[in-house]
Length: 264
View (cartoon, rainbow, N blue to C red):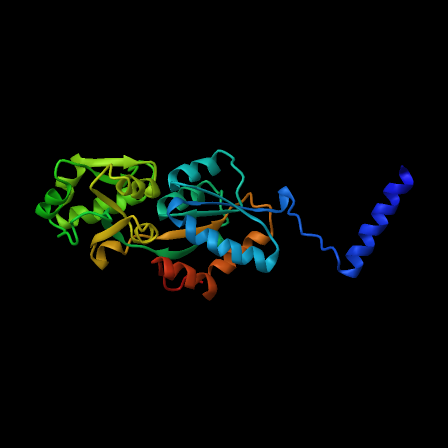
């Protein structure tokens, strides 16, 4: 019995040497880079992560949620090597608690606010006026991410107040868990109108964009990246550097993000 096992081991070893059998690399649990990031970045970060892992052989584990939620998770001791916030407030929150590596902070990306409707809606274009919004929603609601946890709520309120449309919007808001949830709410027809990021709208063919906020309304939208103080994986810094590279920039720009100046 023992002799047979030894013979099998020798045979497998010989096959590996001869190239007949190849061994696939297996990532160890503690070797993975842990990234906690804003939900709106899910598709782009996962795409960038696949390229990085293929090049570096390092596994990346992502967890996506509203920025406030993941910031509080990190503050409560959740393990993370890299934090990505959809606004500066929650990055500042962790910085003030000395929970990020301040010298690694980079404001990398910008985004835009847009209104969406279901793809089959008769609405093709909507004026950013009280009348335009009232006509678009009828007796329905406006889907948006949770105003208490998702940064888009603050962005939307500030920009909409400047345009004079917030008063007609606020009583009709239908809050979802995050921006992705708001898109799904419109896609399912549970709301005739949604206020989301451009990048999320572009990523779902079941909705269409009918209004884009003016450029000056979107200047405050900032995605900030930083290594955490508790980061254990030295490869996390390499992944952050990769996210600032031209290869990653092409991924982000394809999705609709703006690469902010002096990001590197």
